[in-house]
Image (cartoon, rainbow, N blue to C red):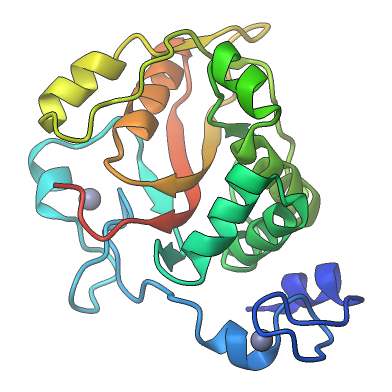
Length: 231
Ligand SMILES: [Zn+2]
Ligand SMILES: [Zn+2]
């Protein structure tokens, strides 16, 4: 499971989390303690009890989202949340490479995906932050998993984020026009949306709906972490 990870980060010398000498960015002990999600809804990545690989959560059964499958290895919990914050708010790009490699290490040998698309930030937010954390993750994934990525075709045309207190239906309505496809021609059939963390799923849902309208047939959501409840 960790072979890609080892090869990619094999030359560093201190564990990013505990500081002990290590061959990799994480020492074996810290790596073993990462908050892996053992069982999840295969469509939205929501953590579930039980071991049925094919399971769907209640919400995906009753109101399926526009995306078709999720690959989200970790819970949004210590230390993954710390690494994501360091990337996002302190621009620690090395943590972006670490997180991207951790995500890549959990992908199957051949991910049947034609194109990676990071969730874009709105222009104003991008100016403010200076970089897009999802694009940083997609860059590492593209390199490690040998997949093409496009950083321009999917754009965010609406600045407002969905409100956490809104119901799912309200959030979807708020997000419906948030994304636009500006590629030369339609997207390829199988695409993966990339983001750092999935909370309600509304952002991914809106982006996936945009891609389906533009012609994509299969949309996966790839993220480092998932919050336990989508309420
Ligand atoms: Zn360590
Ligand atoms: Zn689900």
